[in-house]
Image (cartoon, rainbow over all chains, first blue to last red):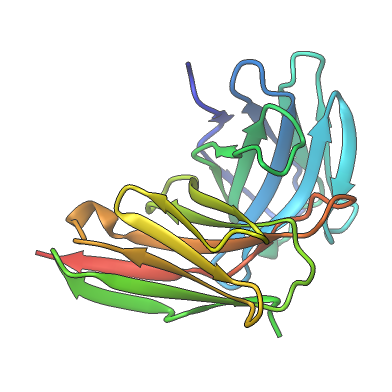
Amino acid sequence: KAGVTQTPRYLIKTRGQQVTLSCSPISGHRSVSWYQQTPGQGLQFLFEYFSETQRNKGNFPGRFSGRQFSNSRSEMNVSTLELGDSALYLCASSSTRAYTDTQYFGPGTRLTVL
Amino acid sequence: KNQVEQSPQSLIILEGKNCTLQCNYTVSPFSNLRWYKQDTGRGPVSLTIMTFSENTKSNGRYTATLDADTKQSSLHITASQLSDSASYICVVIPPSGTYKYIFGTGTRLKVLA
């Protein structure tokens, strides 16, 4: 079974631009969560989608948004990029929202904002 | 103050030796506590999942313990291997109603030959 895939793996943008990252969960998984990882803050929760609905959102500004499609694939969008948005963006999927479910992480998208 | 604190920040050990990583949390109550291993440049991989009522959980050479009274968890690695070199992250998941994982900042482990 293929793992979680994220595209692109690396991305370089300039301040003020917008970016869209994509995540394909493991086949059959319906829950997709997004995280931001930086050296200073570590891993931080962005949002979670289940059955095309955002179920929860972390403490990030409205410039960060996402969506989930009927096939469970998810995208996240960051508008008006800032230097501080440079980070590794990780996507994770699980089959349900149960707390006992293991989340499987993708390799991440490394975003650099110049 | 972080709700999940890990120590040490970094650790260097020789191959074959054992080590113990610590996680102190203030999140209470919580539904479960997890340990993840993250290799450089890759996403985290789940090692153990423990509910608040469990004291210990093993996964091969990895053994996690949980003391809900002192709000401490530890991850013990036995007979370390070079491939154990990675960051180890402790994660606390609050009760239902929120899906917000609370991550520790991790311990970076380096195993030397």
